Image 1: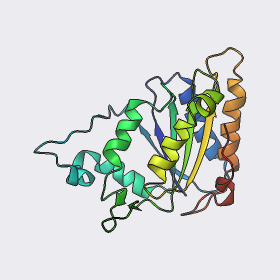
Image 2 (image 1 turned 30 degrees about the vertical axis):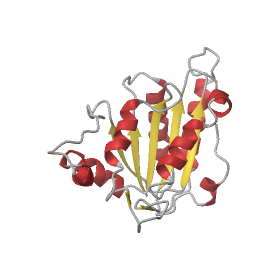
Image 3 (image 1 turned 90 degrees about the vertical axis):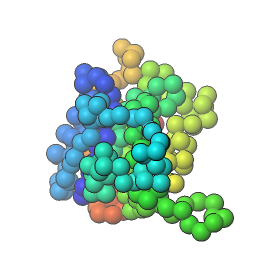
Image 4 (image 1 turned 90 degrees about the horizontal axis):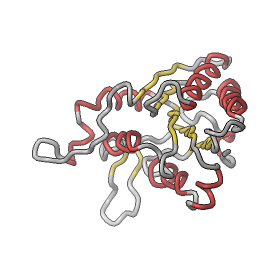
Length: 213
């Protein structure tokens, strides 16, 4: 299986980076062959600003030469793992800008005939795991914000581009001294250590059940 990690945090001493290390550790302990690549958006100095002008036409976004390396990695991947903090109830602007620029018509989806409500997703067969950390309690996203984070990522983004299998790990209260950070890191390690490895549909039934917080 080909696994692409998209890491989005400016601090390599953060809990998010510790999550990244546990993903790598779990993959290394997995008994199956998992080829891994990492995109570190801050280290890459990725420009999240979406620009349209006379030189950059919206219809040509899927051909932007600046993004070809990233497109190749997304095409290559069977599973995408996103690691990021929750800021203001949603992923960082850096990651949202990555989606704005990358998930373009002609690459991530294509329009059907006129009048159809939804396009055809072009990234079908892949799966996604979202690992996020936040200052507030986990229930803040679910109850106070109406599950906005998961609706944004699952329904508005990944389902739109053809990805149906989306798992969430949302860890709240992570700046508390009693936030059980080590236990949460261990859960991530065990998940990737025990992950069933397949190709195309990856996680199968294990990804189809209720997501975890």
